[in-house]
Amino acid sequence: MMDLKRRSFLAGAAALGLARTARAASAMGTTPGPVQANWPSLVANYRYPDWFRDAKLGLWAHWGPQSVPQQGDWYGRFMYMQGHPMYEHHLKTYGHPSVEGMKDIQNRWTAERWQPEALVERYKKAGAKYFVALACHHDNLDCYDSRYHAWNSLRVGPRKDVVGIWEKAARRAGLRFGVSNHAAHAWHWYQTAYGYDPTGPDKGRRYDAFSLRKADGKGQWWDGLDPQELYTGGHAVMPDGIDSIAAMNAWHEANDGQWIETGPKDDPAYVTRWLLRQTDLIDKYRPDLVYFDDYGLPFGPVGLEAAADYYNRSIQWHGKIDVVLTAKQLSPEARFGVVQDVERGYTDHIWDEPWQTDTCIGDWFYNVARLNDKSYKTAEEVIQRLADVVSKNGNLLLSIPQPGDGSIDSEEDRILDQMSEWMEAGGEAIFGSRPWRHYGEGPNRPVLGMQSEDKAKPFTARDIRFTTNKGALYALVLGKPEGDVTIATLAAGREPGVVEKVTLLGGGPLVHRRDGQGLHLEMPRGHRGFVPVVRIDGRGLI
Image 1 (cartoon, rainbow, N blue to C red):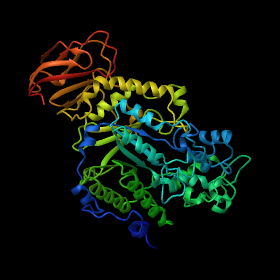
Image 2: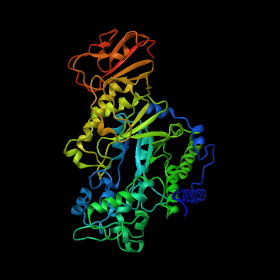
Image 3: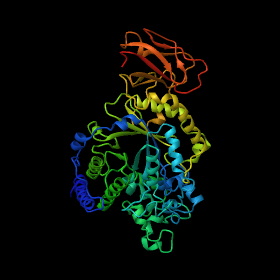
Image 4: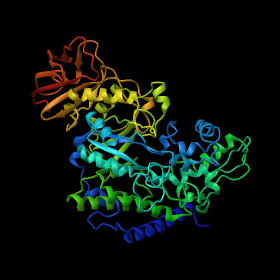
């Protein structure tokens, strides 16, 4: 019997050939250029754009139909898992998922209070230099004018080209524009929709994805749409006879609950459609940044095809590669051909290459509980993260979650206002800056890697981060100092150079002295701002 690895290789090769042929024959075609679909070519041709290195902060609208229930992340998967709080919410609010499924939640996404231009201006004032719109999540709805996927926001929900409207608002505001594509995972993520209740009065009753076909939509709001195209087909259907929630959860965990980076073995056309949709997205909106929610590139060689084509299109648009493509868990070499994204995570050193961390002030999709229990990240915590990331040669991509109606809530408003106020003085230490010889000092050593935020300890006034900009050295104090501040890294004899002038941004000159213990700063009493920034001018410091 052919082993699994061999079968996977052959399936991947077949998918690659089909995808290449389909794209070459498509309306977008395959863009000629020097970049080939392999890692050595990506690395040899890629150069990190100056605009990205200077930008430092992006704001992200991680917004789509899963924002409608206001319950947080992965609603489209968990609403089909009996016993999960989202299943219980769905049952109580919308009905049984055999009747009211994720397709119907998507159509409830009306965006009636969405004001994209006003929001983008708010984000710009809060410091954003680039703006990213969610183009397609695991729920498989394309939030744009999709040529190759009928389940899109012009036919379902808002009946608007959401990405196109965001793109125009961002460009008018003078921001770089990006998109995020998470759709490579829809095929395994959605398999819960083919399941059933293992217990209770509806025991064994299959959910909507299992039975609905295009013909069933006649006379319905989704007339002409095929639910199997949305739910991706039954690639791992839960068998009959499971009779407990624990057994159901265990089955899903073993069969469709892992993070899978390959395509479905029984449907190579799924990967082809993904490449066509991705290329269509790039061709229509010409994004400056593309975020892939993948470990490495989606679908291996097909992801390489997408990356090479994106870079070649950038050369066609700009005369050079002036775009950013991000992915996760890259090898050290691959990080020189694609920008590494560290989701909700930290690093402990200055990277040679630019990188990005992405996070959110709450859950990725809007969760009203964050407002009610006041558990958003504060503006101070956002600026602390920004300072830490920038000091290590990174950028911060921050999401401000929106309810389904497209608004932002009062607490998010307040956080953005406080960020804007900080940026008026502190922004010069961030935007256009570069790392110093040392990223910083202090007792806080964050837990490293992806998804490590919840293990991090609070920063204190002893935690200091450094940046350089236009000949000056900046020290960002991550806590609120209760008295004077000592920067041990700048102790006399430890670092070369002469300190001539020290200024508190937004507060004026500071009295200072330097000895073998550090650079001592007399901070003004009653300074109420968070993350104070000190500019240090002198000779030979940088």
